[in-house]
Amino acid sequence: MRFASNWDKWTIEKQRSYQLSMLKKFLVNQVIRFSPHYSRLHKEGKFQVEKLKTLDDLKHLPFTTKLDMIPTEENPAKSREFILQPNPDTVSSQLTTKRKSELIAGKLIRGKSPKSQILDEYLPVFFTATTGRSAGQVPFVYSSHDVLRLKEAGKRLYDVAGMVKGKDFLLNLFPYAPHLAFWVVYAGSESSGVPGFHSGGGKTLGTHRILDLISTLKPTNITGVPGYVYHILRIASEKGMDLSSIRSIALGAERTTQGHRDKFRRFLQSGGADNVAILSTYGFTEAKMAFIECPEGEQMGYHLFPDMGIFEIVDTESGEPVGEGQPGEIVYTSIDSRGSVVIRFRTGDYTKGGILYKPCPACGRTVPRLTSNLTRLTNKKELNLAKVKGTLVNMNDVDEIIHAFNEIVEWQVEIGKVNNDPLETDSVTFYISLKKDSDQDRLTREIVHEFTKRFEFAPNRIVIESTDDVLKRLGMETELKEKRIIDIRNQCG
Image (cartoon, rainbow, N blue to C red; front, side):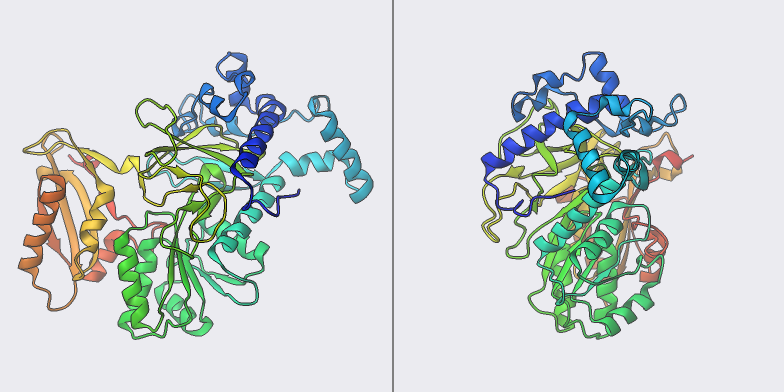
């Protein structure tokens, strides 16, 4: 498989021309032939690839959502319907003339039989899965074809982040699990030649061993979930550790806020690490790849790979596409992947600044860029409160309030019911730990004030606990992602 060597220098006209050409071939030759889900929709007249004359015509194709893939009692193998599944007995008759010629060439040049090549192209060899927090867990499978794409995507991540073979050493703190974040970092290390220690995070090695690794390996880059990287850097700072080797921090799997960035820099500077690039990444299981900001400027947006997928931004209510730079929900369409394939997938992620097509003013790459200010739509909770019923609260904003207080070490928000009664109104409880000698009464008043100003209601309770107790609540070393905001309303009673 070959990938474009100059993928980040194409003009927007070349990008769109390539995407349209590849997408039409992909839909006709692969998706409606081999995907049970899209093949069925096409036969029912609901997936009219014939209307695709320009990329603007994508709007004529139906959306795919997480609900389409979540297993049900009636169809427990629902996610399998999105896997390309050519019939071994009839696949040769369904292949294009060009593909048949490639198989013959593969036999002559590499000595691999057409059947072996077909197996490499379609047979699942690896999978990742969604975390299942906002919906049921869904596996996404990769063939050998997709693994090569994953390695290329990982290599590009390292390239955009400015990591160089022979110069950099990476410490991967993402949890060791069948989740995209860990594996795209691992694949990028392997394909770029940048060495890395893939620790599996606190759940695998434990915090103290990871701190020892930082001391002994002197990594130039650390990557992981924001909450856990914060936890590591905070302890390293408290211990007075030397952090001067670190040149960049790459964060993923959860939203990165300005509060994170500010606190990270204070911890890093206390350990002798100045001018550290703090980069956010964006990825999701259904894309089978991830994207990163460039380190040349502050939050210049996630640099996309136009030859590997198509992004749209649509209005959250109408589903209609919006213009460049306009806010909306992110929609993704795969180009030329195998295994699990999604077309016009609604991610549930909202970008306030939309998508930009002008060259990056920092690094000069001409790729489309998703603006960095993203939020998860499912983090908007409808609360039935004593004063206001049915209030929609964006829980994405809670960490901005918390990070404004330097005295707060760790925190968790719990949404429950008053008196644990399922018929009562909702309640919001803050669990926080504080630095030594903090003024607890003043902080409590200020938190209530800021929370009321932002959300128009106050927390029902603010509970001050030890840092160890809050860390246990979060599952910092036992969960794949810390449980920062938990909703236990369905457990009350």
